[in-house]
Amino acid sequence: MQDLALRRRPAASRNGSSDMTGMTRSSEGLDLRRRKALYHAWHRGTREMDLVLGRFADAEIHNLDDGDLSVFELLMEAQDRDLFSWMTGSVETPANYDTPVFRRIRSFYELQDKTNA
Image (cartoon, rainbow, N blue to C red):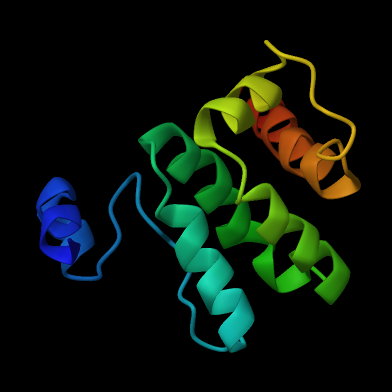
């Protein structure tokens, strides 16, 4: 199964180096739980959610306290198609997922859009 996953990734991602759309933050210095969350954020079912959650995790994983990290981990258990719909606002976010961490992820991208405009 791992071989299949490796074959689907570009060569630059397989050897651990980052590329334009890959992980940019090293997990060095992070505790085991945060390293796992960072890895999971970049290894989703869809590339779109890899980018959404992975880039957020690269920038913010070290700033999440244990409670926020728990919420982030729960968010990552949701289906990618649902998360993407909630993130884009095409479907209303269920109350149990509409958390401060979820809103923080959305605002992370809203701020990036404003600074890149």
